Length: 291
Image (cartoon, rainbow, N blue to C red; front, side, top):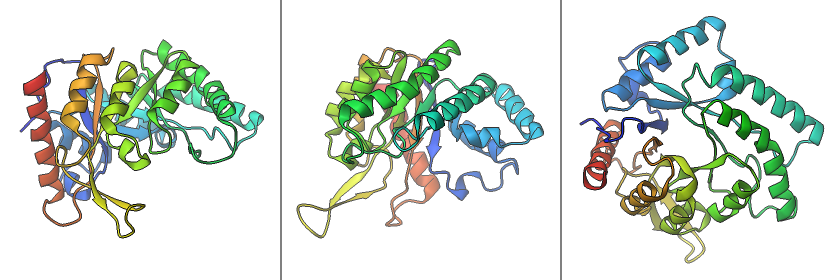
């Protein structure tokens, strides 16, 4: 089965996990192998770190950029800066480096959005008062968001099981042209209700890690719980509700970057490929039912 989107500007792809079974017996070029695998399922988007692309040789870069263009594929760039632990002068140097690389690679990578996260901080650490955290985030992200907007590749921050969506929305309100990259299951990691988090995030969403998890009570009730991988739709993130909310409220609903983040169950009930294919079928069902 292939994903057949009703909106040609919405693209589906895979961020993680890239199990070896996905690309065995395909191209020796790892990027070409990823594109070949995704195309079998009507998908064409994968992600890479900004510094990862920068570390390629000139020949490797040229080959990648030509491949993306020829195959109508997209490499979504991810960038991050240590918002809390670097000095201001170190942050400024890091920002300048990020801006130079983004200016070079957004267009040839065909990166429809650029993603980031909160780096090495967490809402429950005690490094700085909350107001100072917001100011630090916004200071760093503002010039990057501005450049990405100029390049027509919106800059977006992921809820990375570190901050509540409501926390990140405060940063968005202080940072022009910063948007939300919603991970649909990370709310479960930090104690948020996924559907409520999605409702809050949706008016700012430009893309997703479309992910599901099964939640299991841990050994030390009620303080511990376990998170298990599963095919999309088999877990507790209520993906059907989240998909409907995003498609109703996102200003980018017709040109979203939707990326699986898929972890196969550990119990052996599904192979990696079977889990992927089951998830593709689930997504096509969502599209067919909801558009």
